[in-house]
Image 1: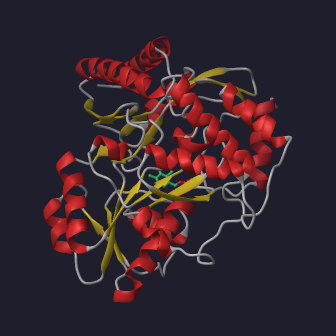
Image 2 (image 1 turned 90 degrees about the vertical axis):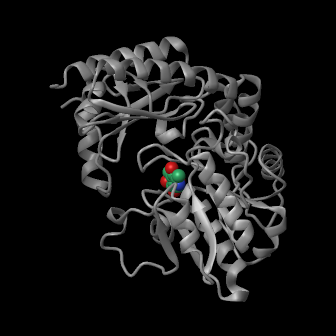
Length: 396
Ligand SMILES: *Cc1c(COP(=O)(O)O)cnc(C)c1O
C-alpha cells in the first residue's frame, strides 16, 4: 500500500463520508501548484473553491500567520482586538461605509445577514427573503434553505420558513414576488455553484431599485466573487449598485477560515450587543492572514492581473470552444469562468486530474475554471493545453 492508499483508508474509515472525493492526498502547495503524497505535481485551476485566491501558501500570508501565532492566537470577542479593527476598516474602505461582523465561514456570514434581515423586518411583521433558483448560500439549515436548489434540501425538513425562490435574472418575477411579508432580496453577483451565471446589469440595477422602492434589504453574497475574483475588488462594483449587506469568506483569509458580514451604516443598529456572536470570529491569526491578503492585493496588483489574465484565459477558452463543438458557451467575468458542455463534465475533470491539473465541474455540465488571482500566462497556457488534450479524448 502506498502512502496515498494509507491516507485514504484511514480517512474513509473515520471521517464522515459527506463528500465525493478525488483520490489525491495533497501534502504541499505553492502558488498554483500542489504536490500529492506520491510526489506528483498538479496545476490547480480551482484552488479550494477560490479560498486560495492568491495561490497556495502565499509567502506574505504564511509569514503573517507565523508571526501572529507566536504573539496571540485567540482572545474572546468581549475584548478588543487590534487586527480585527484594522481588517474591518480595510473591508469597509474597499466596499461601502458600514461595519463588519466576523465569523468563520461563508454560511456563517450569510446566517448573520439573514438574522439581521429578520430583525429589520420584525416591527412590521416582515420576514420573507427572496432568493434565486440555482443559488448557493451555504449548508447550515437556514443558509441551505436560502439556497434555491432542492437537491440540497432533500431530507432535512422541516426547513425554516420565510424563503421564496425566484428565477435568476427575471425582473418580472421579482416585481411580482414582493409582498407585505418581504424583507430582503439575496443574490450572488455571479452564481458559482449554480453553473457560473452572471447577473445581468439590468437585473442588478432593478434589484436595487425594487429594494429601495419597497424598503427591502439588498443582500449580496460575495463569498465566492469577492476579493478580486471578477476583476473588481467586489463583484457588485462591476454593476454600479451598492448593496445593504454583503457577505464574504473564501478568499478573504488567504487559506484560513474567516467569514465577514458587511452592514451598511444605516442598518448597523439592527444587531445591537447581545444579539449575535461567534466565539472564533475575527481571531487574531485569521485577521493577520486576511490583512496580508489585502496588502498583497495592493502591492502585487492582483486586480490588474485578474483583468489581464481573465481576458487572456477567456480568449484561450473561446479558441477551445471554436475547436470543440461540445463546448456550448463560455461565461463569467475576470477569473471566474464557466465552460458549458453539451455533456457531463466529470469524465473530463477526471482526465485532467490524471494529466496533472485540478479543475471543477458544477451543475453537471459546466467546467468551472477559477485559477488563483496571481496566475501567470505560462500557467494558463499549460492548463489550456491539458484541457485541450482532455477534450480531444472525448467522443464527438
Ligand atoms: C462557498 C459559498 C458559500 C458557503 O461558504 P462556506 O464557507 O462553505 O460556508 C456561500 N455562498 C457562496 C456564494 C459560496 O460560493
